[in-house]
Image (cartoon, rainbow, N blue to C red; front, side):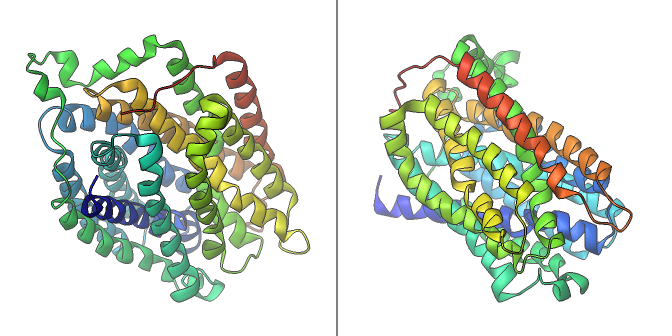
Length: 410
């Protein structure tokens, strides 16, 4: 891979996750404080991510693997998405906001698989090369949080009261325009399945060939585990920022970037863990890190025990990288060259789709159950639910997934 191509992929990843982190982290706080959304409505808004992820494999399987270059689809989706982000910026009621965020997430979630496909297509050894590209996505998420908390100060008590968090949508709309235009300059990533010369069947067109991966017992267990572990994961995305605001932490969005800073470290350590410990142990460490994180949230506070909250945030590097990035590389190794895009879309379906859809609903129900009359939540009890569930999933994965040697050469 040339230096020029590497720099293009790094910028692509930076903008991809700057856009997502620039509005999604503070979404729950914005909805609850600025347009008076209930816990149920907040859960409904977050679940649009899951509906987008459920649709993503069909978009990728039907289009990216069959007819059009992945980088061109990426550009079109981000340009349309920029318009929807701007409409979200102008909205003041949940009834109007919801269709916009639903439409946006249906467009955005397929791009997570597309940026992976564009990246993997340029790599000879994803296990060694992908982490160095993906780390720039983490930097993008960090910069977004730093701008919100420390530069613009949109998430201060005064800023929230003045409705300044709506500016996150304007900021990311501009970034989406930039990424949309830039995508057309990325390395060409043609549809590989079309190159085979075989006649397309109905099964091919719907992208269902990627389901053949389920014949591999280990992959099936990994897929199911991905769904289950994302149920407790949804609690973090939906509740973490409102929780930190409610308990009185200063600059919560900026401090949440500690999680992304740790991502950088553990992304760089990921190749070592693959070599030294293997895929199974790496995934297990990630799952158990979720258990520890939620226990720290349950028993920490913003006084003498604030360090527990900060450690819980900082565990994100292990929680996210060791599970999601490991899973992306594992999936790529299993898929083979013909259906890389479909397989990446399939794992997006499992994680951001089905698992989190269930998780967001459960998180909304539990948050509403432990909502007091003064508008405050009983957070120490709420966080024990995802901690317990993550522990159960970890034990099941440890028992059922058989250790195997994996060839990560693309």
